[in-house]
Image 1: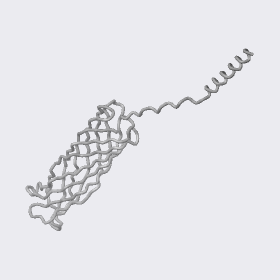
Image 2: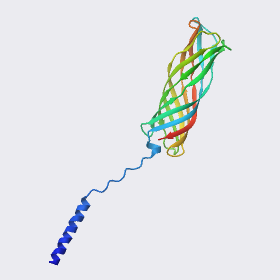
Image 3: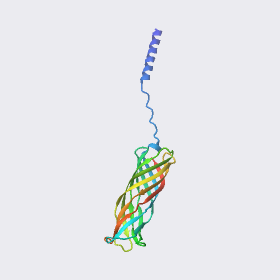
Image 4: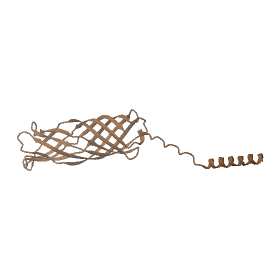
Length: 224
């Protein structure tokens, strides 16, 4: 009898062991994502210098003003940049800021204070980020700028000063140097091929002004 009992116990133990072997193993925990590579959102807070490279073609009562030009003052502002990464290499960037510039005449209009204006110039670019250089992450990009001119103020007795809103292409290059998975330092340079139409005392002076600003920024990067 004891041999039969021992045999039965051995059979139960063998069956239990076989069933345990057939049970699925506990699921392995998901891998922890590499924030430096896969987090899609990035913010940058930069100090931005907007440096116009102006030119102009102006006329007075329909007749070209030979040798007339304009000078546009530079502007330095704080700026917020929001980027979204579709992949670890491809991202879209939107910059937000407001600048103020003074405008005066040069050449045939030398010494003429024309006026001042505010510009809201949101710029959206599509970028390619190079990821083979460790914490140093250079990028290039191209996109579009839409500049809204507002708050124009005329000078020197002009009765009005108006600049038209404008769409312009933009190109850029820059880099982030990541200090850890979240924080880094950014340097960025953009060129915007921007022109606008100007009217002074309607019927007196009008024409086209090329602003073509360089936009140079440096600041702090935060990757979520």
